[in-house]
Image 1 (tube, one colour):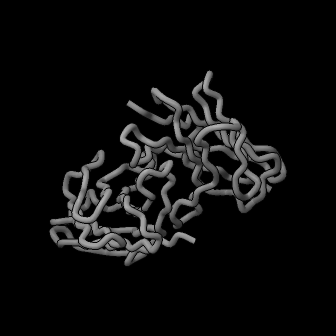
Image 2 (cartoon, rainbow over the protein chains, first blue to last red):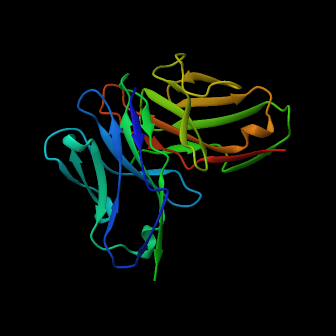
Image 3 (spheres, rainbow over the protein chains, first blue to last red):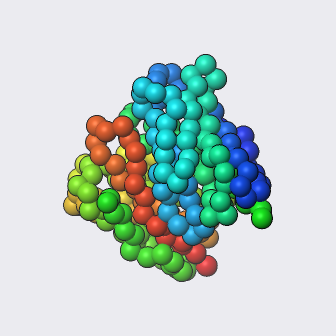
Length: 113
Length: 113
């Protein structure tokens, strides 16, 4: 069965420092992968997605993610974090049926000044 | 822009009450979803619908039912609310046959006392 693992429950990064959030997936075929961000009390916003082609994908707010099939990973990165990036981040993969997403449990990002 | 709206941001109900959570999307999406979000558990799929009057159980359907009489509207029903249904409820929609990216509403925080 498909699954998504986000190994880090909580990460704290200094403002201006680089960020990498880890995501590992389990899926039999080429996956469709997503990163979402959730600010406190809000719904989820799509940051970026990978379907095929270039394994480095660019998203909104300066985020990027790299798909590595050999490692079953889709890590999210940002070169310089801003205080407004503090939020919860979810990695997701589309399920076998092609409709519902399977989410990781999320990583909470705190930004220190 | 895709817009998914939910009828209430905050809701307080009593144990045993019948509760209706409404979700409306304006992008003519075929697929609609209801998730429940709890700290440390991430998002868990309750039900989804891929067409009017069609529904499929997700991972945690017990204690819930759904209704989709019109394409744009998907309702989640708690037949007899219980305290363990206190949670954040998120609605989402997506295109049928697309790669699966979902668009989320702002969420309803339900408290059952």
